[in-house]
Amino acid sequence: MIHIEGNQIAELYVDYFFWNQGIGAKLIEFAKDEYDVSFLWTLEKITDAIRFYESHGFTLNGQRKFEEGTTEYLVMLER
Image (cartoon, rainbow, N blue to C red; front, top):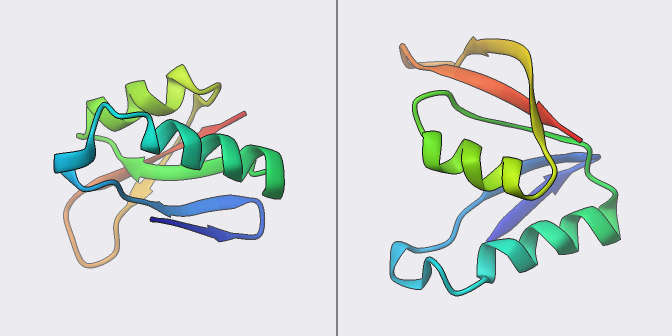
């Protein structure tokens, strides 16, 4: 499942059962090709997600903010 808002990937979710089957990669490529997405936010502590996005051309840009309603930080990646 992918949710795009403007040029941002607002949500990307692949059920754990389907990980490592290329589904996430196809969703990212679709978002880049069809919507020209340029950035996203993800939880700082989910390093697997950060590595995944980096492997698809996104880089951490140094911005971080609190996730509303939690004590967790979000970090921004852009391409």
